[in-house]
Length: 152
Image (cartoon, rainbow, N blue to C red; front, side):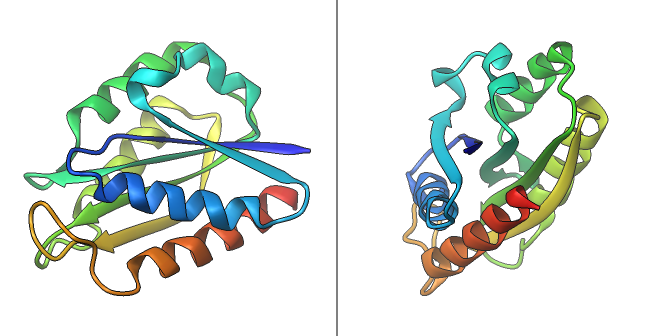
């Protein structure tokens, strides 16, 4: 059984909903098991227990959420090897992909043992939400596709 973890940060619950939808998609792939943890719920050392690591957060002023950035910085000492990963964010307005691209760059710089195999940017209709129509189903589909990549 391959194991995946989604590490996320969420302020209003929208990013958490996307993380949950991605997890549903991954768990729908036979032979893959996915868990979700907020940044404060897992120690960076435990990342070694997973074959795949996904990181997600909201866009905060054109940047990834600081708590997730700090988590990634702390994880740099773990020396992860041969993992696949993905990054996702939630955004408002015309800020699609702004934070997730920066998040990807941070992951690749700090965690060179992870190859990024996917990116998702999910729209939120207002600062506090809710998610735009179909964003959860897109996230579930993204999770299913990513789950299949884990098995390759």
